[in-house]
Length: 344
Image 1 (cartoon, rainbow, N blue to C red):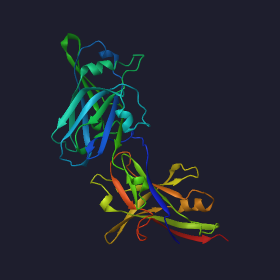
Image 2 (cartoon, rainbow, N blue to C red):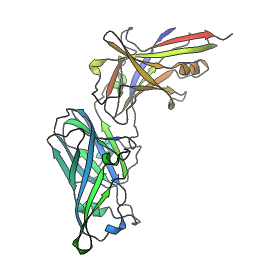
Image 3 (cartoon, helix red, strand yellow):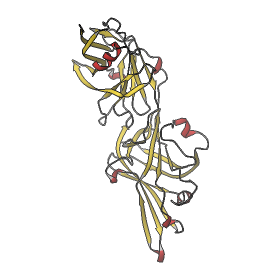
């Protein structure tokens, strides 16, 4: 049995990027990504010692946009605590979230994908963070605000297993006898928050947009009422047709997506998921998902007949997958191919 989608849409979601292997910073046209880094508390041993200099080191591991374009950013002291799972670009830009006075800035004619950039920081800002034994929390970290326009760079985060890829804070402290000591801090927390153009995506029935980074997820509904109630589902395949003219990717792209089951309360059940496989017929590219266990749940009484599509790297990249939706031509619509038999 072949069933075509009866409805499709695209909806924004707030994603957690605190465990992402990449910290995305920069701008490409109207797409932009801001970052947050909070280093672990500084040791009490430097509390009374003169702080000679401070610098932030970031290691590049990704780009989106023009890899040779100029890259620049401004660094500000964050003034309030931030939750890793509820930030939006508007909350970062809200008055009072960060000190508008810059505490550092970097300007680079171009930045490769495997280099370390160094940005000097204001030592007075570092002093305001206090040390580990302080009873009042004043270390809310750094806001990294992009000021360029043609590239988003990805930097290693604290989640990287290789310490050489993690953000590093280098402090030069004057010790006893005038000896200069270097303190390196490479642990803490981080997050990026991205935004971009999506003015009519939720209302566009002709396409399904799956955007990494912002992020957007697609949703597709099916009517399987013609399936007998007492059916055994042997196999069911969801097929989506890519629209390359509205998609964006590069050589970092993980060409894979996930489909999630949706509960009767409308919640996306991310623990019920399956991964895509891609195939081509001529010049047309399809993504297929094995969803037999989902269709079986529908037959057994689940009232929601919706599937949600997300990018496999929606928390660490900016790829856009555009598929034809329920309002597209019949030959391009999302479809389910179901193999079943009746239970005697």
